Length: 313
Length: 313
Image 1 (cartoon, each protein chain N blue to C red):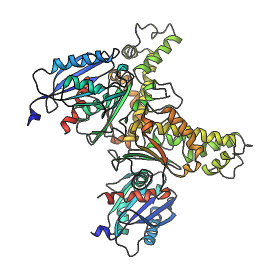
Image 2 (cartoon, rainbow over the protein chains, first blue to last red; image 1 turned 120 degrees about the vertical axis):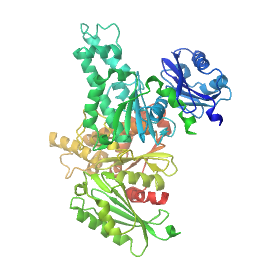
Image 3 (cartoon, chains in turn red, blue; image 1 turned 180 degrees about the horizontal axis):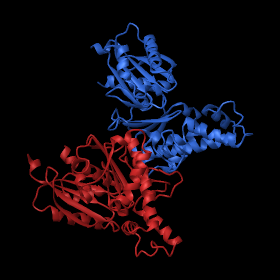
């Protein structure tokens, strides 16, 4: 079969990096490329970055299919990025037609980046063997993807599983989406930095104010050193994350909740208060049937997930 | 085919009433029985109520199958009610074996009552023609059911779609489930009465305090007459409901959200503030793809839904 003679190319286009990988027809990752995504540039620069990564990865091999995951709301049928706060040049851009210019007749599939990560972890990572999984991407923002029976829940217009914009605090902090109390506005990279900046403003002599840069990583290091303000920041963020996870357990009752993304590097600073909260907060016996675990594919979950539809067909 | 020669019996066992109906093999409702469910009595009394309704509805007809929906967490495989706050006598009770004693060899299917209502509205009511639907039952408590591609999302242990226990207010009001800020603790029959009781305690001369009984219906009547405290109660409840509905749109992106249950009788008192809120709160374009509507089967949605699995097979 020709299916066994060639490769797939999976591309995860994020707000900062492009992570591309070549896969065997069985979905095994063979080679990777990582580069700046040029997401703040114009669309042509982004296409150049994609082309450059693809050229490095696929030379003489027969290219069976390309998968692309992109941050934002994606219309998979028309191949347009409807709204992408993190890659503004792609808002409304006809990415698929332009990609087709690069890849000729090769099939191209597009999906939301969180859905791609969910498919990747479900079929080749932490969700392997589960009947259903909710994936939470914990990064600068918060994304989600729900897989049941091997398929992503897309929703009627492709917008399902937007867990970052589930409100867990009526009249809570303002979110980037314009709403209030969203999970993302309570526990995300930008939300933690926002809270740290407030502490720094109000306490100019605090250790937080004296940090050379305020990032989740520097704040996690400070908390691990025992600094009480930083510890309280993570405690609060973890508690809110726990409420969000309990909600997902109550609403989806998945066999597992898988956490991926850079914020996970905070480790027990984030997960311990989250666990205490979801164990208290979850309804009845639902939590007894759901396991929470960390993803195992790291930054390659998305690229792997984008090619899954080819493997299913 | 024998499938066309006989009837189905659908039973919706609630905390107050039992609603039973006889259906044709095509799912058309032919006759109904409604009686107190004796839910506060012992299990034998509940079985008597079921038996009595069944005897009225099915006499000489060949009984092809029985469906039973019950409030609470239900283990459909073992036929046990795992936990039913509203029907305490059934907690851990082996209902299916006892029902089999009543109905002999006739197949019996059990499900959660909100899932039953969701299947009913999806296949024969407000959800007819939709690809996916989230149903919210707004009554003394709040339940939920999600249907996609004609099937209920059960979750890994049968506990999915427990929308009443989605927290929308961190550190919010205590819920009956022991958690805080659950949708049910903010907007349900019992939550509204709780808030009204507090107003009555704090303002003994208020119109609310002078009501002969505090129920959602008397409070809705008072609000319609323009009494400001009662209006504020519904405004607040509706706002919280709107946050909950926006969350469901963001998480499930269903083609429709269907509202059923007695609290819906408050009409625009509840739905107008809810609509204002979800239109503000929902993420991006998700709400443009979801319609919110009221159920059309009334108190018979559950009974109709319990027999749907027979029609599918």
